[in-house]
Amino acid sequence: MAIITGTLSRYFGMRFLTSVLGSFIGVVALAAMLDYVELMRRGADWPNATAWLLAKISMYRVPQLTERIMPFSVLVGAMSCYLALSRRLELVVARAAGVSAWQFVAPAVIGAFIFGTVATTIYNPVSAMLHERSKRLEADMLGENLSALQGSSSGFWVRQKSAEGASIINASTSREQGAVLGGVSIYTFDSQGHFQTRIEAKSATLQQGYWQLDDARIYASGKAPDIEDSYRLATNLTLEQVRESFATPETVPFWQLPTYIEMADRAGLGAAGYRLQYQQLLARPFLLAAMVLLAASVSLRFFRFGGVQKMVLSGISAGFLLFVLSKITEDMSKSELMSPVLAAWIPVVVGGLTGFVALLYQEDG
Image (cartoon, rainbow, N blue to C red; front, side, top):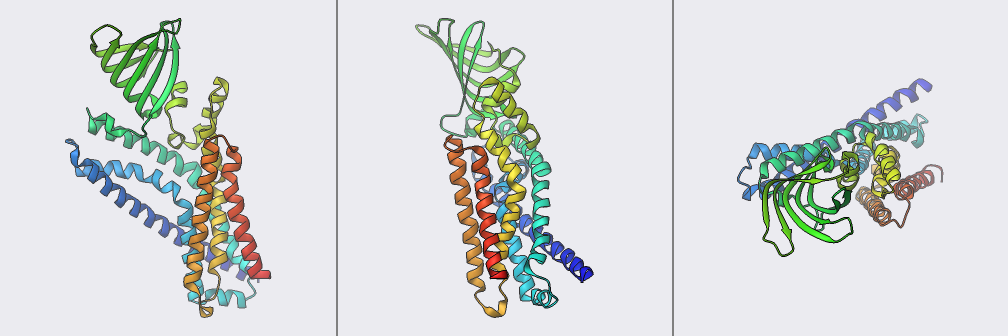
């Protein structure tokens, strides 16, 4: 009996992994196609855009896009796996051999946990690196039109101090995790806090002890604008401190997040976004395992009993509600209304308990 159970476990586990990988590859292909079409639409006004360059940018962006929908790939893959096993009566044979639902769900749960661990430790750092490369390619292609890369209406803000006084920097774009800024506006103040000048620059690159500004326009009260091809603004900021202000949590690889959080704590800066990202990545293997339990709770009904459409709709609805819950907790954490730990783990606990209780009721009454 142990030999039969072990063989069935390996079989069910391989069927699950094959189904999930197929679902994930399909999602990646769909996301790549949609993103490429959108880039082609936007690139119609870009003089340096070519079909191959836009394809490279899209290819580098897709891994990070698919990270958000990875749990739904596991949900859909697990549902399709169990529905296929049920349609071919393989689950009936397994139950007739004395194998309970927990025994053929366990391999999928373990496979999902391993899949999530690989996604966190390997896939996430690669996707963050490729996303940075896509931003560099897009900026190089746009050239003079860097403002088209604006990520939000207010952009990124940081305050700095130097021997010459204080400055407030606003940038509409950020590349290389804050080392290169685009669409820069700088407000400088003297040592007494009095406003001095406003500087507008196409880009700013952090060097050792200063910002290198390109195509800078310097506005001072009562004077005509001073135009400089290259201008240096003194700073005492290091690259690590700049990254805290300009690097979005999604662009920081998993293995570097603890360092970012530690630096923010030492500097007295808010690190809620980085803490939330770190906790979400830690929770990802457990979230994928919870998705398997949800899928199993709505997919193990035998085909001859009917109601397959209702089962599929129930699974998709459960996944959608879990996504809404995760977005609510994420927004609350970013607004500092909830701990990042709770925000990341509440969807995991809710999804896992829901699937576990539903499966327990179906299997054991």
